[in-house]
Image 1: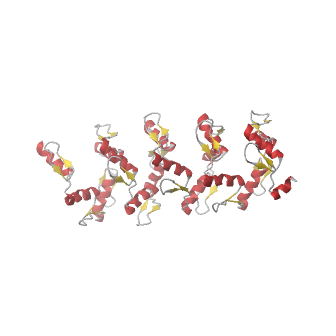
Image 2 (image 1 turned 90 degrees about the vertical axis):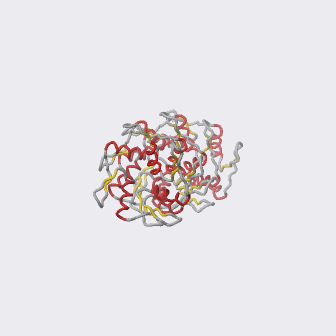
Image 3 (image 1 turned 135 degrees about the vertical axis):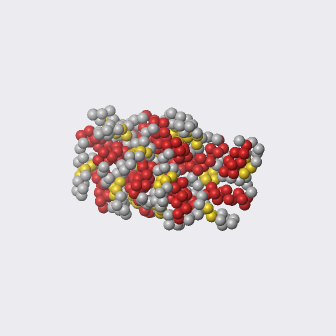
Length: 456
């Protein structure tokens, strides 16, 4: 009789609390416990209680290690038959559960149910400590650990603990070096399936997570969450040493190293150390000469995707970062931050030899070389050396004849942008540099410097 109801879709047993109906009275009895919180089946090893006897039996296997359901393809074993059935589909490629809104198919009905909530926005699981709601009970359980500090999954090699078992499994691979998830397009392999899925979007160009404020789309929900904070101004991660707050926990971790001096990422060629792994990877390319990121407009290649993104703005003219004091806009947030210091007068980088201060750390590093005499940037055409890479770049143009900065009024070209800016003032008549003694104005700072000597 019960089996016939699967064909007839008959569900004659209603819940008197919510609007769900069930095929059997047993199913209804189990469901009612989700409302009452009743868990009548205790584990005799630990202090956990369970909703059904079958849940208890599965749980006991976490103590005994029993996995009675082996896969006959790869010999992997499972504690539940349902997990084995889902696993089989990784061999067959079968995804029998389609979404009726979009064209995606899923391995399990539960995956489909969770996916549907991305369309409906439903988050049925509330946190009882804060006001957040979650799509799955698992997400809510993991979130609760941010309140309790509970990290129940410990590495048996280094004793590091984690809030999720999947994070522990991924961490273990840092000890073993295992990368069991290969990309079927290129030859890269990954330690986590989620990282592989994100990587595959670099091949497909897929960005399934749209911002509801602007028109940007993102490869991962985490990237979208971080991006939204650029609209809200939210910075939920405070530094416990100074008064700065950060957009992401990773930004906070990197910032803390400015207090500790920790540089955990070392180059195995020159032993230079870095605060971030991405900086080390970019640095390694100075040894290899590798520039894996091409511009699709011109023939330039770049060492990092960030450099390429910034470069593309020279073609598009995009300047997405506005100054909130004046009406200027900037290509990068770094340029905008440095510009803001012209309003605040802030010079946070001080020389420990002469106490001169600078608005940028790169200017301080270049200045220090005036004390040490170091010139680490050689010209590969002549025998000259320079104390900054930018000075070398400008010098190399004396060999190549390149003048990349052109005036849009008279078409005269210059080797440096600062020379173009000074030249533009001959057209506009603008004089930005004022003598503080006689108040005479000059179009170039060097002319002001010469003029000042007349007062002394």
